[in-house]
Image (cartoon, rainbow, N blue to C red; front, side):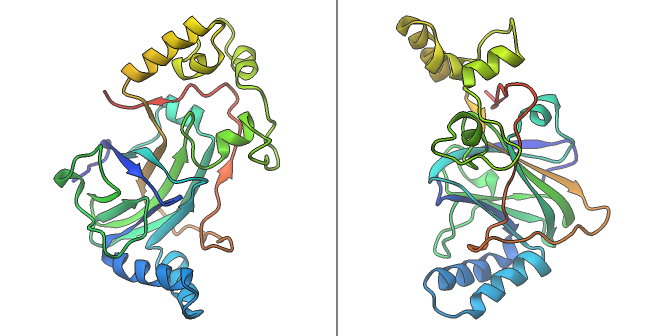
Length: 257
């Protein structure tokens, strides 16, 4: 069981264009309502999903722009400096976990097993649950480059593909780095694309392949001090991301070796 101050990390090899958190005890009902909603079976399934998200506060679903896998860190503490400085998107909400079993998933599939983190290879899965003290939590999901699937980083680095939201000023990544981090060493993932020569880019690529990689999402749980406002949902029943451009070029949050 995770205790205050703890962290765990794991990777999913694939996702269904989403990341969602929820209480394991409502997993089946959420999957059933979501599948029915996608199949346009009955309109009341939309109300069932809204009830799970807005009233029971048992589910937090967030949309991703493609179905790549992702690496997640779950923490029961305040953000460290890198985690605080480098996020490009976040979603905050209240999550009620009466059994202390929090699902983290990239799919919605009632036919898939939801194993405990301790029972699977943390590098090869589609979903799992982690054990925490039962209770109500203030939960924030943060997204980070270079693998940010929320479109937060894309709005800064590739505005032709990802239309920037209000307050996001696009900027060439190399210019962004040089402007805000003069004299610092270029991170390998940036150098792999913007190194001065082909040989230099190859060296950066090799360094990337040999490193443990980067965290894509940090899921932060803190004990709930007072009820939080209900989130609003978009037309597809996702909680929208809040985007920002960090003051300094985000270097990325290194994964555990």
